[in-house]
Image (cartoon, rainbow, N blue to C red; front, side, top):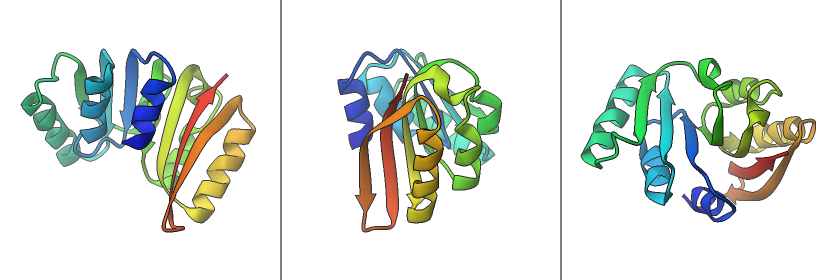
Length: 148
């Protein structure tokens, strides 16, 4: 949530893509922070359905769409912010010039130390800059950054 608040504080965000949405919590928070369009994606049918219910319960169905699908199938769609709280094996496939760098900013989360180091290295090869890193108990890492 802190990374999401920082992303909105750093510039106007009209659209968000939440890959690995789970319950839809971050999509709903993004809409509350000002996103006009959010795409919430999860490969798990139950997660996508749960997100859809939570979006409805929060009155955000006009601003958020929840779909079941693979993150790789949606990465090329344009958005101002991409949120990826997703398994490392998927995240490393998402960080590529064809899809990742057409976003203004990104939040990558759910990374273990070694995975975070590898993602940091991959990002350094792109036109991306990590603005802030969070480390939780030396185990769990989150990045907020911008692409140029």
